Length: 126
Image 1: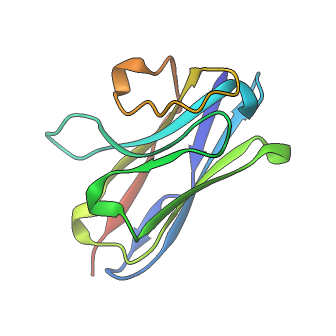
Image 2: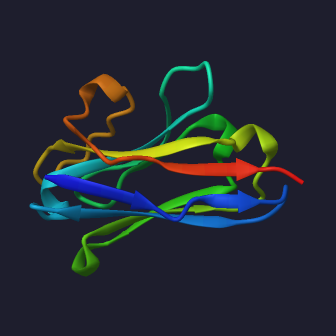
């Protein structure tokens, strides 16, 4: 499976962005999808994940209430709606996939993921 992440950009504090992760070579029913971020000098960290059944989701504590993960099966796309953005959200954001047909498990460890997109830069600055 291949993934393409896009939608990043420069936004002021308090602003919003919507990231998209387009999946090709497979359907979303087969893959749990995760969004991860990597700031300069830091490791890759989990932001939000959605199980392959589409029902189970997870959010890192600092983004709860601000970010929403969703998916559109017909478009083979997983979204990350990012509201009330803060300067500390600045990072490169990656989406990743792990094979798990119609599963409910949430994978939060980046080491568990098998395929990665290329990353999209999010910069929150005034």
